[in-house]
Image: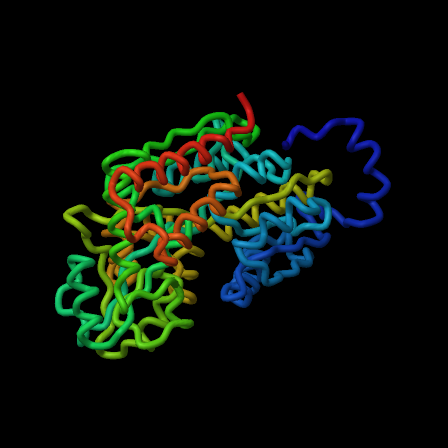
Length: 403
């Protein structure tokens, strides 16, 4: 994406001269950044620190707007030209953005630094084929268990957690109709569901073995959980009530501490029916959209690299609690002593790095979870449950769009 055609540059010359003012070896025009609302003020401060450290960009105007990782990719793809120049997004959106020509590949020298300074999972998450398309920003996009120590006596098994919450009249929250959280059961039981993409982001292959003995075991565990009067479908502690335990993420650690007070605790996910719950682990990243102005392109690269550097990742953790992907930042005492991130780190050893999934997969998984919650499968035997999963597996395979 960085190979700017001479004809395009010539065509854009007049517009670029009118719209931008490039300083000597720098840039003095406008940039727009989209980040999660919780990090807007932090990002503004870091942009000013970047400008102070790089005089060639001192006159650059940067607008920081609140557009979360869940919405940014759709907004960018809908209108690349109107989108932010730099934007945060979750790893599962990478293939879509690449396919839409909405990401500029990372400068080779910057890519070397990214690969050397960040954990392997985050480096893989920003890479498609042989090309790095974004800058790792966090290694905290996973889930684990928050619980109330006065309610849950032993968080090691889901059966024990549910029993304790039933006894105390408290709720157990687990969003089993989400394709993200639902994989905790299937991946934990030993199942696989992955998609392969080509260098342009098209889905070219799939691998799924939900229709198996392990898949039935996972589905039965979901059914048994949903049968409990303590069960609530959800994953946001700030939206819950009477919570004894909840499967949630590091982004809600402040809410969890407020909700549980001195009884606040966090650990990896429990076992269920003898197997360890697994699921997805993921990353947030910063992408840069293609630019026709070379000075602006260099400014975007430099700023994105700075905003994802180890120093800034650690500062972001201190400001809003986001877990770093940078190896030095991750190893800091402050990060290591964080209860929520420690629980996530423990859980990630049982998690699968989230790859690229077609949009239809998420709807398919929601449908399966909704049927479980509605009790549709409560009276089915193993053979009937296997048929349900075979239909799921066949449908998931049908989403391959290129050969």
